[in-house]
Amino acid sequence: QRLRKEAAVSRERLQLEMLREMSVERASLERRITEVVHELEEKNQKLDDLLHALDEMEREKMEMQRQMEDAMAKVEELNIRQEEFGEASRMAHSFTEFSLAELVDATNGFDPGLKIGEGGFGTVYRGRIRYTTVAIKMLNSESTQAGGSEFHQE
Image (cartoon, rainbow, N blue to C red; front, side, top):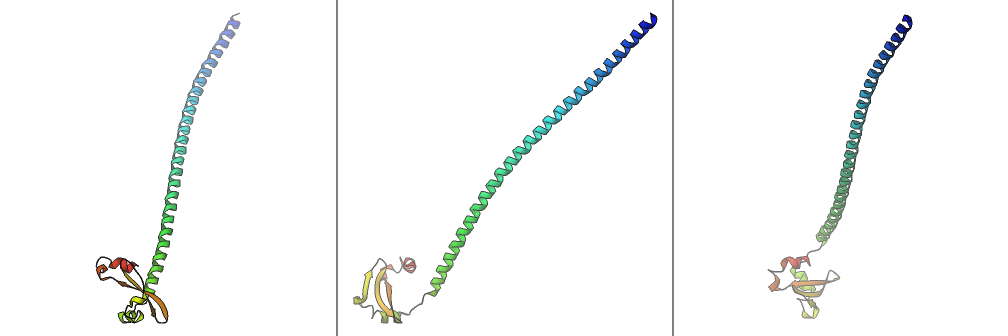
């Protein structure tokens, strides 16, 4: 009987030792689970931050794309204007200048019979220069100071 009691006590000690080991292992596993959950939460937060940053970068990219398109449109518009200005400048340089004597001769001394019309800046006459019929505008004496630049634009 003594042996049975010793065997029973021995079994109980073994079971207690196993329970302690299992308790330690369980506590260790619970700590590891807590650590893993914390790491997972950190990773999820980093992922959320990265997704937010990616969205922000996408918005910035779209804004930069829009600005680039606006700038390209302005450059195109300026190129067109520059071409038009260059064309107008070339045309302005292609005008032939005539002397007063040629104009007087072409209009027969600004003959009233050759008058086509009158405007705010002067009188328009029909004339003939170098075998070509032309319109010649003579600036009024009252318009010389106030309207000179407008007259040149016409």
